[in-house]
Image 1 (cartoon, rainbow, N blue to C red):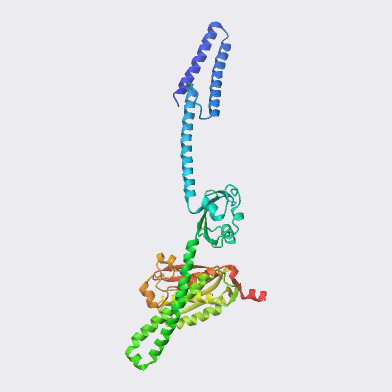
Image 2 (cartoon, rainbow, N blue to C red; image 1 turned 90 degrees about the vertical axis):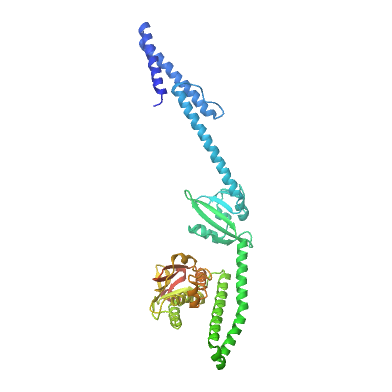
Length: 436
């Protein structure tokens, strides 16, 4: 307890004692006690009025000068207000620095609430999305940025990856938007101009496509000459092994060029794959026969196929993706191992799975497997004759079909590759019959 309270109680006791003593001398003790209490009450009311008047006037006026408990109350309030002002100055300074920082950012920043209404935006966001301040503050962002990809991304609630789109205000400008949820259902929208990166990517694709086209003709000529030279008995006797090695490397380069052209085509075509019926069961059986004819890997390929389950897509692309997964499993599985291929329905969706008992893949390499020419074991990859582009092709084929690739593996115990297709791409044979 504060020291002012004992003094305040002592003051009241002395006042009442003086009133009682005076009443004892002059008579009418009750009246004198009433007068003493009234004086004490009026003094407290005056102090209360001065405190309220000081609080109402704000910090421009000094605290009232008084004694006792009221003086200590005023001191406490003064200290709290001073600390509050200091904290407020720090917060204002911090807010000013944050606003200056976001204003200086080359990327756009938008703060919006759970309804999609804009609460604040920086100058870069206004420039990239053609938003105006303060006219557009309080408006719903989906009403101002009318792009179907952004609307789908906003309503999807899966913000792990940004969405890339062509600016609705300029066909030559490309934007990347990412939503970051925070606070109580608040969302931060980050907008970045990716036009330069997009142009560099287009230049890279054009270079790869042009270089691959230019390499195809000389490789064809070289293959023809090497084939003719190997048919010559004298040359075969003297240069048999070098000719065989050259023919093998030429065939490998031809396969790389073919994969580069296929990958370039998949990257260039931004359209969604068609919804043509694909007989996946027959496709899998054909792939199995071709895999066994490779002459490498295990002799046991188990099939678990739902014969009534079909897919809507581009048959050529589906075959390219599925066969790449199966041939990879054959290349990296010992002769005594097993490869299992399954095609089944999962709920309303469907899954194509290739599981092997091969050498496996360390966990740190799995996120990068779909990159072009990425190799876990470079020497092993060259020996197997792979191009390093198969899984990149698989990724782009699945993207064209709105599907995804899941990979799980453990060194020494094999790998599992799962292609997951959405229900829009899945049809059962009974569905086809009913539709016709």
